[in-house]
Image (cartoon, rainbow, N blue to C red; front, side, top):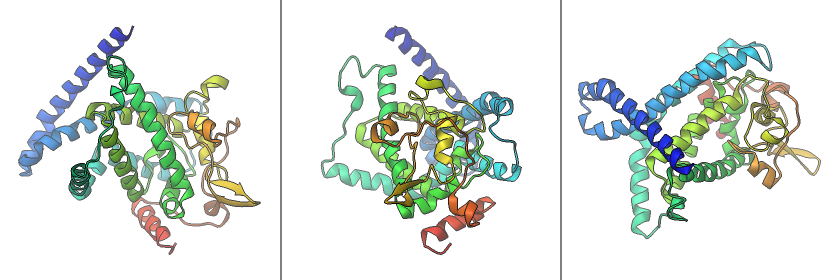
Amino acid sequence: MLFRDNEAMDALTDAFAFLQQWLFENLVQPVGFALGQGHLLETAYEGTGWLVVGLLQIVVMLAVIGPLQKRWPVEPMADARAVKVDILYTLIHRLGLFKLVMFFTLETWFENSWGHLRSMGLPTWHLDQVWPGVTDQAVVSFVIYLVFFDFVHYWIHRAQHQSAPWWALHALHHAQRQMTMWSDNRNHLLDDAITSLLLAAVAMLVGVGPGQFVAVVAVSQLSENLQHANVRLWFGRVGERLWVSPRFHRRHHSIGIGHESNFEGRKVLGGCNFGVLLPWWDMLFGTADFQLCSDATGVRDQVEQGRDYGQGFWAQQRLGLLRLLGRA
């Protein structure tokens, strides 16, 4: 069985490599030469892999998740403009524009910093080498890294909610009153940059291969698109405890529930249902809320006090920085 799984994984890898090579040769490489950036083609080839992932994700969103939203919506579409802005966020991230900016602004600093730590003796722990012959099998190592990075992301997500400065940025994600499959990438760019650098650092520490890391991110993002979808869907009493559903994650976005906790009779930063893929961590650390309800989404001060989180992309980014500085 494991042999057949590895064959299937190899077939998917070959198909992906073909698409990456074709797109690179017919689009990315000619553009690179036309812009006089031929010296960056090796990096551009790696970036083409992310572009292929993003295009495939958008196809699945439109072909699968979109029809689900139309068939079983939680609420009617009331704010089309807000959804259009979320689509822009998705295209910026899934088509590689965010990663391109990260490359030209932070990549050199990150590589130099990591090289310095390596020279000081910082080791790499290869999780897929724990049990040679078993954990280094393609499917097994993929599952190991998927679970591991979900654990890491759970704690990053909790920090986004429990650190006041970080919440000032992350609150933008929760300020969407019209949740759809496009809402996952609705984040402040600085919030995304911090999260990306943390995950990249962890990836370097545990020795995950580039292909495995791309696969883990791809599955995670697509699942998050479904979680944010405007679809009345849950996975049953058992399934809800195995994988994060749209119902489970909507609870995380519910006004005054997903971003607040009670402490000595008052509301403080906190919340529930921080799991990105797996609800296991919420169950283990006491932050799971499995109530079967579909409450309105948003942030309390946005709804009760009329706090402005911005309507357009640039307004949202500007107000996020002002909140971080305590000026909005």
